[in-house]
Every structure is written in structure tokens, then in C-alpha cells.
Image 1: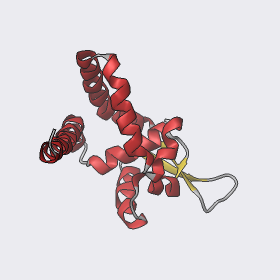
Image 2: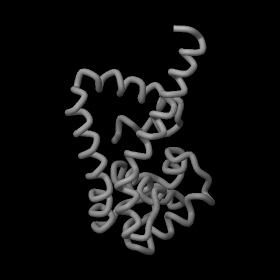
Image 3: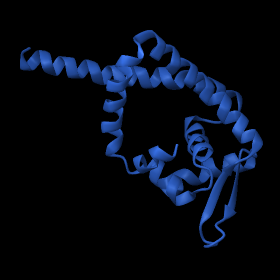
Length: 153
């Protein structure tokens, strides 16, 4: 393979990442629209749902956003009664995040379509390919500050 062919193959893999990401989020985005929320809200619900009691600062680390960027979507989720915040019992300055019952139901609806889609792909390509794919994703994720929470999900 020439350098040019190798480069072209890498461009194609980058494009595949883009299309896969779009496919992963297409159905949940449509569901989110029905609830007048966006993808950012889904991400917030996902991590709070799988890491109950997560602090606001921990969520900032995971999502790699500023307090300003997180403020509005968190407020909207509280107003819609999808999440609650309470003070940490040991340090009242720390706010802990939890899903409400309706937040858990919404997260389940949003995530179920992704899990079904992922399982269908795993079934199609075979489990033997998933280990290599997972390793590639882990290598990418390793660079992210929030990846330290992966084992807790």
C-alpha cells in the first residue's frame, strides 16, 4: 500500500466514525425532540443515570464542558423533573445529581434504541470482531479525562 493509499484508507475510517456516530444518535435524537430536549440532555441523563450521585464537577469533567455550557441544560432537566440535585452530606458545597423516576424512564427510552442497534450490529458482525473494535474505542477514550469513570458504568 502506498502512502497515498494508506492516507486515503485513514480518511475513509474517519468518515466511517462520523457516519457511525450519526447512526448511533439518530433515533435517540428523534425521541428527544418529542420531549423538547436535545442530545446534550441525553448525555447528561446517561451519565447521571449510570453514575448516580455524580457531582456537578464530575459531570463537567466527563462531558468536558464549562459550567456555563452545563448550567442551562441542567436547569431544564430539573424544571422538567428529570433530575434532582442535593447537597453532599459531607460537603454542602458539592451538589449531587440523581435521576427522578421520569428521568430514568426517559433515559431507558433513549438508550434502548441504541442498545438494540448495537446488539443487532454485534449479532451481524460476530462477537469475535467486537473485541478489536472495543480496544480501538478504549484507546480513543483513554485520552479523555472522563474515561476514569468507565469502570463504574
